Every structure is written in C-alpha cells, then in structure tokens.
Length: 102
Image (tube, rainbow, N blue to C red; front, top):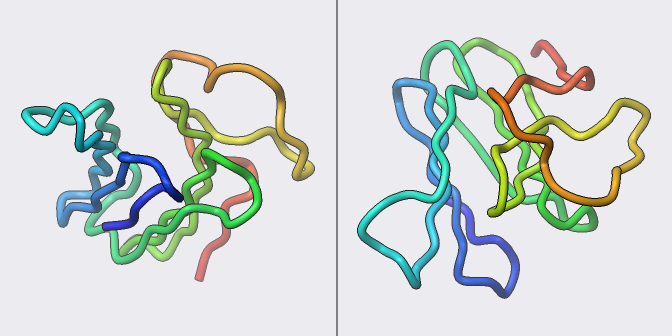
C-alpha cells in the first residue's frame, strides 16, 4: 500500500496481480482497479516528482509505470520520460514502454 503524497488517495497491490486505487473520502469502493502484473504485485510506490505516476513491480519480474488520474483510467506515461498534460487517456491500462525485466 502506498499513499499518494498529501492527498487522501492510496494504491493497494494484490496477490492476483491487481492494483486498486482508493480514496479515503469514499471508502466503500475503489476508484480504479486494473491488472498490473501476471502474478503477485510485490511492490508499488508513487514517483516522487511526476505527480500521479505509480510504479509497480511483480512476480512476473517486470517493473511498470502507470499514469494515474482519478478522473480517467490508469494509463502508462509516454515514452522518453516526458509527461503529457491532461488525463490518463482512458481505455484499458497498458504497461509502459519503459518496462524493465528483472
């Protein structure tokens, strides 16, 4: 579990590869849920500089970055390390092109 800065949002990792985003102001259900890995998610944390970027690592030996915007579905940040302005892009989340196999 990792809290998103000074907000009321946090992300939780599950053994089945899912990542869930929650808001403490609405505790009865998650805001978003997506399949981040094939197998357990071992670690997750928010990027210290890129607001809204979540990094996950899993049993599948991959590290993924996700651009998470509460108003839209999680999506990967663009390649090259530059962030676009606006929402996460909608649709089914996909791993970033900046994935790494451990």
